[in-house]
Image (cartoon, rainbow, N blue to C red; front, side):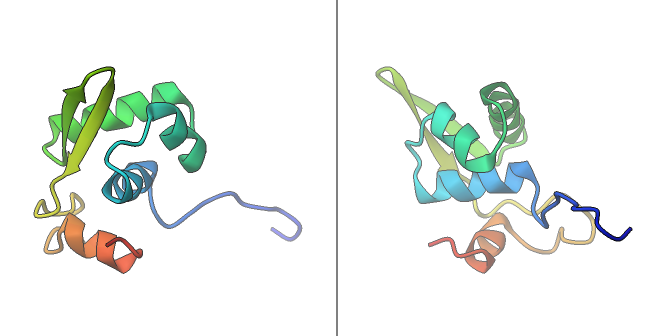
Length: 95
C-alpha cells in the first residue's frame, strides 16, 4: 500500500477523553471534541458511556460539568484487564 496515508492512533477516542479529563476535570465538551478531533455529539456519547461504565463521575456545578476519573477501574479488553486506568494515564503522561 505504497503512497497511502493511514489515519490511525494507538489509543481510542475513549482513552483520549479520559486523558484530557484527568488533566482538566472542568474541560468543556467543545474543547474536548476539538482536542480529540471528533464532534461534540461523539464526545457526549463517549462521556455517557464512560459514566455508565463507572469510569467517570459527572457532577453539575452551575452551568458546567466537572468530571472525576476513576483510575482504579480495570481496562476493558481482556488483554489489558490486569491493568488500571491510572496505569494507562501514567503511561501516556498523565499526572
